[in-house]
Image (cartoon, rainbow, N blue to C red; front, side):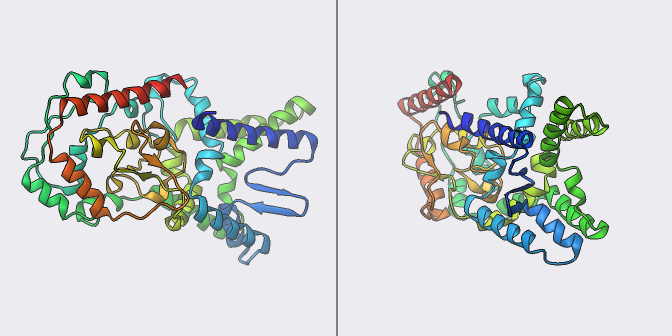
Length: 375
């Protein structure tokens, strides 16, 4: 089964299992509080908010928090891509939205992302923060690229020198990481409100909890004729959050903020690029497919040009869409010095692109895109 289809199916299965549990009165709770018998676990944000609200260390909440941190250190933000029901609800929203206006979980336009064709030379210019003094002609990675493949890609001596001195810590790269993350403010507000009001306030509007509350209320409505205002208010609140806050996952969600902070210590299952297979290294042409398909804005080929690695949700979109099959997600990736990565690109980009290399690269990308469309 296609990995992306499996990833879309798992949240549906989770909702179905929990709904069946509701119906049989023998469920395992919800994703907000899961358990069986005397064993129960809270979501990490709920556990932390509970302890702040009660002003004491609650053993069950503390154990839940510790286990969640261990899971995040091993799997990163995998929960966001594989289990969380919010992207699934967002897909339901997209079913009634024109294709040109659809957005992914990060709030990025899907149409813009699919049509964007970033250039490796442009990426290098941004990373080095240097002026372009050479004539740059890049070919769009489409089937028409073969006709324009004779254009050469060369870098000036000034660009090469500036790139050689870049080891990922220059001011132009680090400034991109210093942008304000609004999720951290929401996370702080959620924890502060719990401490002030004495109960987890955010849990009242959490879209994960609202999703399962909606499922339960609908079952009660049709199963027992239980008609209350909650049947109307809860689904409306969920729809308002998903429809009007399209960038919920990337700009608002405090749970994803908590996980991204903890995931800074994650060292496993990271997207790893094999330069011997990457089209930019082997053929010296522009691609950028991995950064285009990433829902959280990570650039696996040029990490300094995208979001931090701690934002990775392990969705494997970059792995499945790489035309050169150059990306993998090993349990413990081998370390490679940033300087070596840049030098590989520099040496290959300094050579003109041949007709054969550009044509082969365009064919690889076209074949990959055709394969993805048929899946």
